[in-house]
Image 1 (cartoon, rainbow, N blue to C red):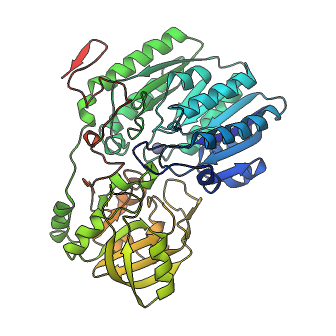
Image 2 (cartoon, rainbow, N blue to C red):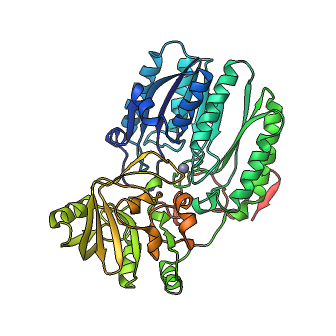
Image 3 (cartoon, protein in one colour):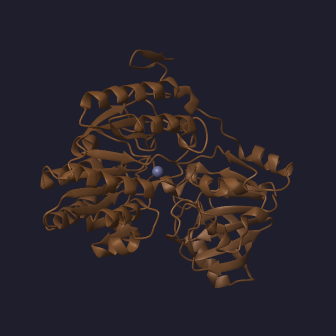
Length: 496
Ligand SMILES: [Zn+2]
């Protein structure tokens, strides 16, 4: 069986002013043909999982195009159209196919389309006709009716941090095999809830999501159910369909799929207040660290998470750390190629005068003028060793560690979400030997850092990825929606 595999994916933060260009895709993850196999074989990714199961079932992968840019602002529509044309051209020339695996993200917005990945799936459907299409999506997909209508099955990640990508790729391969054997006739029901949640509440390592996952997995064991997905959505996209959605796929029984989808949607709706949470001030976390010995306290600077479109050069926490003269503290990371170049010019063991960060926009703090000691310089390459993406290569670009008083700042050329502790270890910083670690990550870091942290606290800093959803002026989002609006109904229930 020949299964085409490919991706054009993005998580678009429409609140970021930084447009996403074709160059961002080409310099991001951009592979054609067999390059895809080389890049993903042996990795804990969707395509990695699919490649493993393909071998077992004698499925022949037909790699097309795999293009993914680091999350940022609106995708330039012409960039999407160029990639789409390239993708469809490869698909048209792929020969006879028995299935298509689309390894997508599900939150790409262009300046013309709110649902670019839905458009892509639809275009693939027009070419392949009745051939099976299985689509995999991130837990942050804003799933639309167009995506559901154009796919035979959608499989979303169950976890955030996303540590089940490999398993979902594996599952996609198993399903495609079963569908081709005639053992599975997928019937999929889609429900969208009037519910918007922020990343800290979506984390599947703690309540309420641990309970939600139990319900989801129980549903997947029911007779007739093939797979089920709860997508928590990406709230930093001001589009109609941002937020929570549900998919239930059964084997040839649409009424059963509808029934289970309604039940699951109503269970989630009933627990909507559990998705609210408290944020901490940076000052209160510093105070707590002063009273604590031992393992590090982690500050989640989710507002500047480059993994969700943050510029990664925000300075709010750096400024407060310096003002408070904190000790044994690390900032990971600040992307600032100009300061890195100045540190390289100064050289290891010397002092450099820098204006650090705050250069992309005015939403994440101003540049901080400082004189720092250049502690290390490196090429910024490392192998991920944590549960997420283990085995893949991280690239921070040229990287400098600058020490200012008791604060070490990891300055990078590239925007990178520091969810793997190798970001610190690869530049000579042992996280367990530090007291305060500020990470530009909302949730992913929890997979690798929870075992070594004394406490993890979400801090209230300004930015395009702030966990406080009331900070945003939504224009295109559907209303009413919980918790932004005072009266929201779903089914028979009122939320006030
Ligand atoms: Zn995600």
